[in-house]
Image (tube, rainbow, N blue to C red):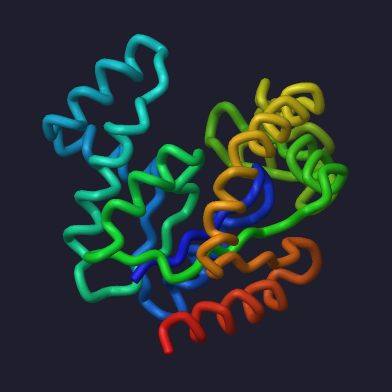
Length: 214
């Protein structure tokens, strides 16, 4: 069985998927992890993806689907949390083709106000030397702009500027709308607020997943 967990950038879907893994032992599969895994293994699809990424391209839906399918095949009989897949209606339809062996029993959508997302994402800061991460509002460094761990100057990623975030959210809204309707039509769509206390959000998600698994 598969539970899809989706949400805009900064919604916390990856964190919630990790918490589900820790509590229940459910397998977590994300497109990023699947791509990196197959590239490291130097599999045929991994080599294809590596060539595309090296040229600055985006990995096509069919190759991503092949990678996700490999992980699903290795997880027969287990509950799987799909983090960030499907990202468009084409991927959702590809996943539906595996319904007999790997049925999607629920789609959990983390809903967060765009202004909250912009504050979350635009406040992130990264140390370019040791890769430590901070947040100017939620986890600020002791000295503004300075890494607590190595003393280097912190930077803001280009895609964490407000202008870039607004573009990312617009793209997400356009691609996610058909997916939402797709799962609503199957009666397995669950909207959950991604704002508030993390543990409260997790409790609500856990209740939904436990209902899915009977």
